[in-house]
View 1 (cartoon, rainbow, N blue to C red):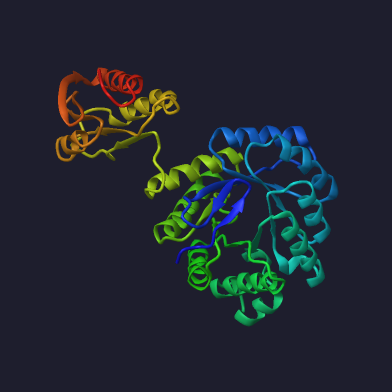
View 2 (cartoon, rainbow, N blue to C red):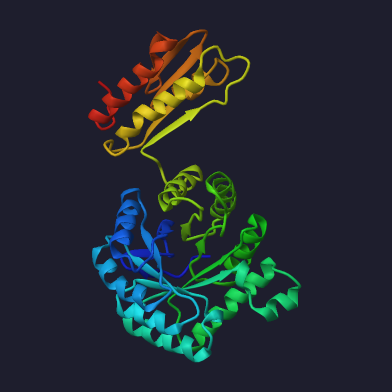
Length: 358
């Protein structure tokens, strides 16, 4: 179903807007210099919304200066103490993230809603598999997708009780299948926009696998309006992976897309070395080209000519050589050791003419 539209600063979440990319700083928020520096790094790689932890009043106060220096919307992450949410909104937070169930009292939630309405700040209801309510755990006997969905909708109902509906929902689990099922249940039952991700996905390598599987499955099912990849790594890695996931499912196009075959016993060149070199050397062109460039690096005559012909630039390799294509036409045949140089030259020509080759 079409989701309600919510504004986080100048970024629309839901409605007909594309899926936005979020991350979270891992600095002490009270360290304004370090936090702003990390936000700058996230902005440079394409982060659209950034979240900061607000565990104390020093962090809530620091948010004011951080917000003034950030170029993207800033979300305050609050737990347990409702007064921190009030202070964060007074400091200019563009959105707050709370789990109403751990705020401590319904009166605290009411005060948060009152301030959010006055400041025009949306609330993300964030439910996590590691902090489900005791009665829900007792009802289901363990953490389940049904329990996560019930918790999320219960907490949403608490905000609605006070006539507040500027809401985004997240309900994350580190179990990829449970995570998917929980989001599917809430997607069917609510028209609020969904913030998707796989929580505590892990270290860089395993976290990439779980995030690609979990977030990719949701996106391909039409579920999700904003997303955060969660990695035990530099937050910049989260944004880079989020962009790749969106590109892989067809929701965002990288400026340069390199496709290459997995190689097999028919391959008669060092295709991995060629593809790696082309990827490395064309990286500098990504911010300078004005439109999508698809480069095919193919290892043999089975699928190679077709893929190379169907790309903007392509090579179909044979024994120690490669046939180069541009715009579907054969250009020339070159030796294996010259393939990467020739492909990069073609890409540079494409870049200079904004899509037209010399």
